[in-house]
Image 1 (tube, rainbow, N blue to C red):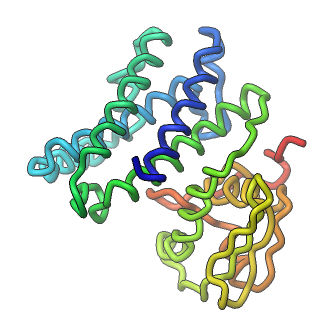
Image 2: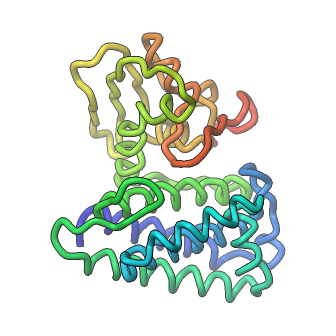
Image 3: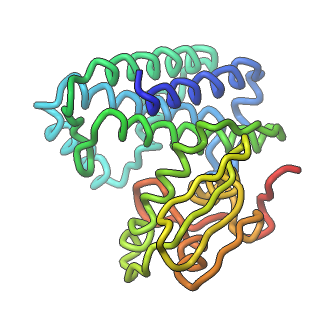
Length: 264
């Protein structure tokens, strides 16, 4: 198993353990993300996992599936609307079981992809490790909203590097997605949960420096950069961290300063 796929498995296992301890009423708690409930977060994770399985197992018909998705979007439906239609009436225990089965199946399919074969997707095709990294990021991000609304603190591990790497790689995407001219990339220096130093773009001007946890929270827009301990030097670094977005989709704004702070 590759490191990226192993990190995805660990991410799902940690979130699953948290969800198993919830009461039925907990599942209806409204998180800070689009007013989604905890159940909505899990429905969406399962929805995208199912897309991944389809992409691996039926790549020839993937373009037709993309057309079907675009068709319901043209009618004004969102992915969220469709997820609610498909899974919204499930008892919460059944929803958890469905997601648990789905992510395990997805990981098995990703492990079976041969060589440099790529998965078709809504954007450019992706290798299994890249796809696993994107799924880890999304699982971690939606999981953070669940940890937050439950008032619990998640202990970060070294696998947070996967989220940080994706955050660094999407520096240019953040600006392109908003149709803003891309500034030069910034150097990134992060301290891992174990105290290791991680560095990206070592020769670049401008600097983002601090804990890997703070950086990950900002790039998935679970925290405003003003509410974490990151040091941002240079106009390029400051502009990036103000709108950083490690996930695909339409441009989204981070939480307003002061609304969500890292638990001490």
